[in-house]
Each structure stands twice: as structure tokens, then as C-alpha cells.
Length: 396
Image (cartoon, rainbow, N blue to C red):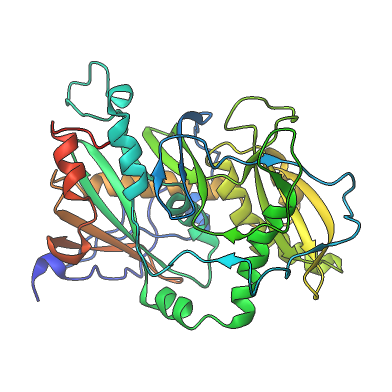
């Protein structure tokens, strides 16, 4: 087997020092352990995220460097909608689905980056980097990293390349995830639709408008914020899709003015709520905390698909709901692991070459391992981007 593609040995010795180097086996590359106890220490420095840009994707999934797809929060007068929202309405005839088999990678974020490289250029950077960022990625990829210490079901594959001093992180679909997508049941497909339909009931097209729940649900459409922040010593530039902004909320400026909209089955007992806090709220928190989204509005649905209650979660107060449960997740563990993972990438990916891809793999019960690949199917930085950031003409 070629050493460049040999998988890293899954280390059984996980007694790594907190913040220290990953364990190295006797013959394979180092691996990063994920046990929560290794990262149970004070919360790391995380700079308040600052929005530096925004872009939209239209009904045909075409990119636009503006906020045309931004929608406005327009909730009902009470937290118990009357009549209840019907999340099943329109599933058969008012639904345009994005082609999930089409792997976009970082394409849209890279287009925004290339168009805004002048404002992103490092000032007096001795390394001569075109971007003043250690990492460029999607918010969703970082969300998966944050929740890894507590994830028990789904693994991930993250492709990483170092190009002109910046590490780019893109996701590859695991075989298990691809199989699940291709064999998704009709029930799960409808549940996915319900989440998008909830947005139709909660959002308007103008700041003083009203929602139109009869409209077509088109999952090609998206509004994305681009933010800068820093985790420990790692500077980050990432984009994430945002559901809406609150024109009347307590926070006027982005990203704090944004609101994340979620749906969940109705909770009937304290045990169900504890389970919700342990297994679902961690992902909601990570997704909103990273870009600085201040609030999450949840719609709790009955078995017939109707929303029977609404509940608001303030992102910065979610920890208060779980801190008295010793078996629950800890935000500090999530952030410390993410910081360690980014440091791991910096130690491993040191050759500046857009055609060299390190593929980092993780499955529940194992440490993070990686393989090296030069050229071929894993390369994800497009030629147009490499040429643009190397001094070529910026894309239109």
C-alpha cells in the first residue's frame, strides 16, 4: 500500500495531555482522541463573530452577492398558533427540492471570497497571504466538529487543503450518509419538508409584511451570512445559511439579529424534554452559537403535522437548561475539542498545495484519523479559484 494513502491506525491509548499533541502510533500517522473528559476544562477564548458579508442563492440555486433572499421574522400573536400551522400542506404539489446528490462543496463561499478578496487581504502579513484567515469553511462543517465528543451515530469526512497560507475545509459524504440519503423513507422526506414549511408560516418577504404559508417551498433558495471570528489562536472565516432576521428584535445588528427556526415533535413528559436537551439541543446550540445567532424559535408539532406550540431559546442561555444534568453535554467540551481539532489540522497539513488533500475521518467510538491524497477525486478547490487567488481576474 502506498504510504500516502495508508489509513491512520486507530489508537487505543487515549491518554493524551489536555491541549498536547495527538498520540502517535508506532507505524501510522497521529490520531486525535475525542473523549469528552479530555476536553473538560474552562471555556476557550471565542471572539464575538462579526458579519463581513452576505450572499443569496435563488430558486435555480444561482449565486448572488447580495441579500435578496433574506426573510423577515413575523411570528403569530401567541405561542399557541390558532388555527395550528399545517406543516403537511403543499408537500405533494408545492415543493421544489434541491438536488442533494449534487455536491457543491465550498463553491458559493469561494465565489464570495474571490469577489471580496481586497477587503479580506491581510494587512502587513509577513506570509503574504491573500486572505487574513487561518481557516475557510462552512458553518455546518464546524457544527459537526463541535458536537463530535457527544455524537454516537453519525461519522464524518472532512477534506482539508492548504492554499496560500489558509486551510480550506470541505465535507465529503460518507458511504453511510449516502446510503441513508438514497434510501430515505417517505416519512423522513416529509419531516424534512415540514421544517421548511414552518419557515413559510414564520417569515415574510418584507420587514412589515405577513407570512404566506401557501407559497411554494423551494429548498434551492438560501440566504447566507459570512462571519469572521477567532477560536483560541485560530482565525476563522465561514458562511452559514440563516433563516430570517428580526426587524423588531432587541438586537438590531447582524449576526445577533438573525433567528434560527426549528421543528421538533411535541414533548409530553420531563423524560422526553431531558432527551431533547441531551440529543437535539446540542446541535441547535452549536449551529447558532458559532455565527452569533441570538435566538432559536422552535415549533413543536403533533403527530398530524400541526404546530401546537412555539418556544424561544436564547442561544447564550441554553447552557442554563443543561448545567444541572451531569450526564448532559457541556459547551466548553465542544469548543475545546474544536480548538484542538483546528490545531491538529495545522500540525498535519503543512504543504501548501491546492491539489494535496488530507481526508480526515471520524466514526463514533474512534479517534479522528486521516489519509493523504494528491490529485484525483478528492481535490475540491476549483481551478478558477486557485487562478483568481494567485493573481488572476476575479469572477463576475
